Image (cartoon, rainbow, N blue to C red):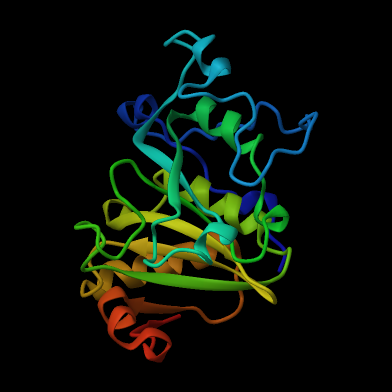
Length: 237
């Protein structure tokens, strides 16, 4: 799968929306590499507030429409837990374009995560769990990649979400990339699974953003809880 530069979603800030247009915000450190490799789930130089972000004035910051939180589920901790989700922890909440890139440039991308890891980006105050009230009646679209091949699509998914590029953006809860032995999966979680028009619109736009050529399916969370792997796709593209 090849994703062309022209298909990259743009990030729409609150200021842009008042002006009535979408303005692409580049990665300020796109040509810079981190000096040291961070540990899984670790953010280098970030402690309850981005130091680089603190040094920027409010005029230099570009606020996003929503705040977003990164979550990490450690594979080694998951194997020891009695209940799913106990090992999941929130890492950092960001609300500006600058904070996003500061974080993204200093965390492991999917290809660098250990097998069994799950890395999430959800709207602030929505937990990436079926039990969360916002997610309870929702579902998810899923795309699959070979091991080490989801990095670009993960970034494009994040940009599409935080940049408010979906027509039904209010339906979006967040996304998760899951690293497994033979493959990597990215799932896009939504609020109201029964709203077929909204889910189909989201799925079609997401597929276009990623330039994804294979089929993708949508599963209801409620059915996934009851049937586990026996849950079938309710919508397909």
